[in-house]
Image (cartoon, rainbow, N blue to C red; front, side, top):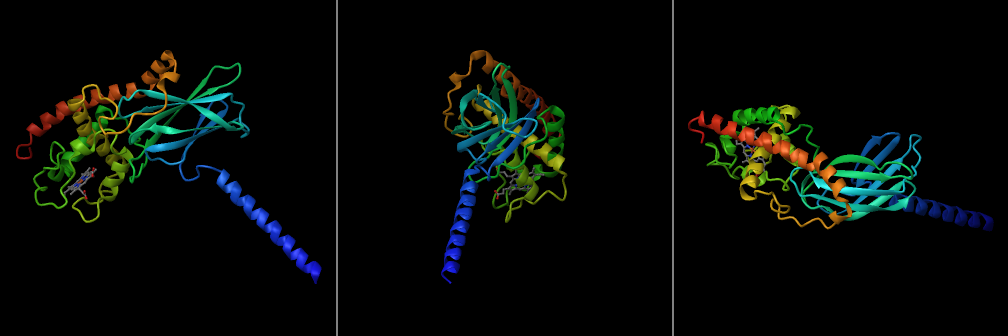
Length: 315
Ligand code: HEC
């Protein structure tokens, strides 16, 4: 009888240790609720994870595995951050090693909502540094980051969006996106003013996509997923951005960081990156995107003015 009791106690202890270990193991497996992106770089597989996709203090976790799936021998990992929707410069941080092939950095790298370019630079003994780029969507607090916009903001996309806008949205949202179309006067709530709401840094493209797709309950804004394809919704999102871009171009000729969303400056130290490297990254990433986008937008705005002039009674 006594040996039964002892056995039961031992079994309980074993179970407690097992459950405890399992729980510990679970809590040591970090960032399960965030987002993960994996890129292949030569024979290495690089995974970047964020603890959450919202503006604020974030933990960025980098795991580097070799071809056989084992942690790779990497000396150091540097991370750089550049906003893709707006030129805010580049900030860089050295990630801390936290295990074999595993590095982490914590900080306010993402200072406003939108699309961000994150580049991991892997430093390995006797080899050239390997640069692995990632694109991530960071949401404003309380909003969804949503899917990444698969379309480039080029002239054909923006023109396609403009056509859809004039056919489906202009009666409420107005030719200049101010929410002052002919059907808007009697609406409650009134349609949003895109010249204020679509400035870079406020909402992600993914969130705007979801709003159009799913609509707004208890408002005149219906869900468009039955009437438009996903491709068409992305074209609209890309076109709506031109209203906000025009606002930024008018109010801040040099598009200073923080101008759009009143967001804080990034706290990571940009000076950690040598000038040559920074130039390279800026050219490859943010600046390139922004220059292209701006050209396409100027082009489209010129054409939109022409289209709007051709439609009397809607201005
Ligand atoms: C019948 C009028 C009407 C039409 C047509 C309409 N909308 Fe709206 N839309 C609204 C109203 C009203 C709101 C504001 C809803 C709210 O704030 O609750 C809104 C909100 C939005 C928002 C959210 C903006 C923000 O920052 O809050 C987006 C994006 C949007 N509309 C896009 C579109 C697009 C794209 C189309 C065309 C495919 C369209 N809408 C057609 C009335 C309309």
